[in-house]
Image (cartoon, rainbow, N blue to C red; front, side, top):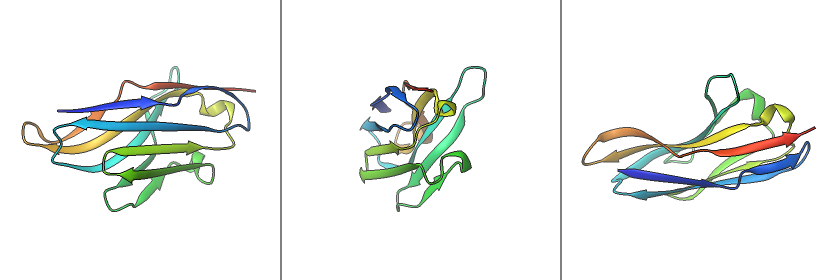
Length: 119
């Protein structure tokens, strides 16, 4: 099993910045990729950004040029969010595609952290 713990959400004014952190723990043999998703009220969960084990990144069009995803090691991923807009308000979830002996390759999710951007 893999546990993901997020931190760094909060309330910020439009134009401000926040940094989200996610730490993985548990019995992963390897974490292939980590990423951030978000879900706003009444909307489906959507990919914000992800990063592979080799460092390749992928961003949603709506955050390109404003958000940066990076990993400092195999188990920690961050999302630097700049120039925040009210439309970025959502619960942000950390995701990890991890290999374990018990479950094989499996998608794990954190509990979510609220980001609210006021206009």
